[in-house]
Image (cartoon, rainbow, N blue to C red; front, side, top):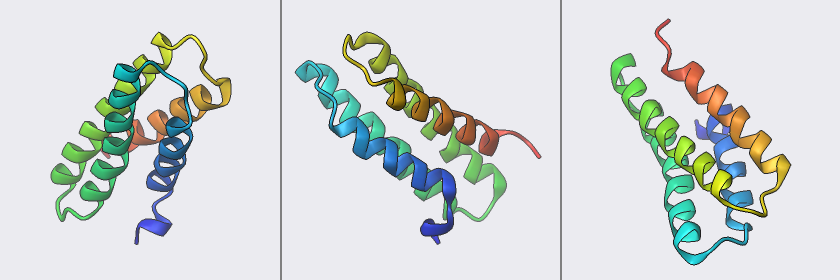
Length: 100
């Protein structure tokens, strides 16, 4: 099921690329937690039965992604491709959170 969930697959790609960043230790640890939270909450939300439950987890995922974007802003050696990927993942998650 998750292999067909495009936003989840993009978040996994973001997670793996974020792991390669050279960051100060405190930001690296936070990036690891937040970027994994993006993936994990998308996965958990996809397994919920009601739309409201799904949106709750997708919203948490979006918050974690925004945290990652803040870390990228604080970093002095960020990769423009990673910033663009984060923006795209954010747009995809935002769309999942919107009411139909």
